[in-house]
Length: 84
Image 1 (cartoon, rainbow, N blue to C red):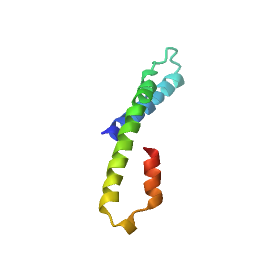
Image 2: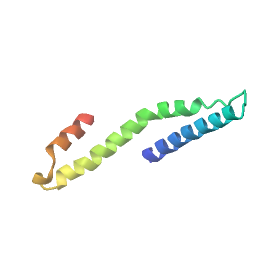
Image 3: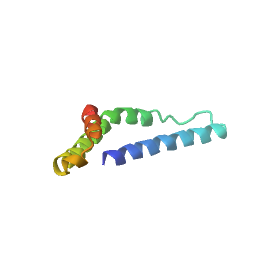
Image 4: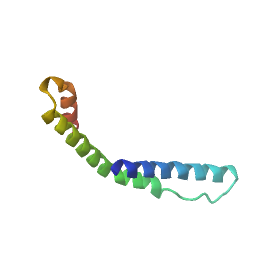
């Protein structure tokens, strides 16, 4: 769900930029203010980072516990733990 929300915010930001560009092309002087859209992305980023880190840890942790020891990539484990 966190990725879906981030995707929707990114799409809204792209759409706002497109609208502003089109307004500029047709010569509208009072261009619509969409500054709240990028701010929404900045405000959401810590939550997105938290949830994606938790999901990465959760899925990796299950593999570390259940996969055969020789199948566990030590560098990948170290990189994932360092991320958290």
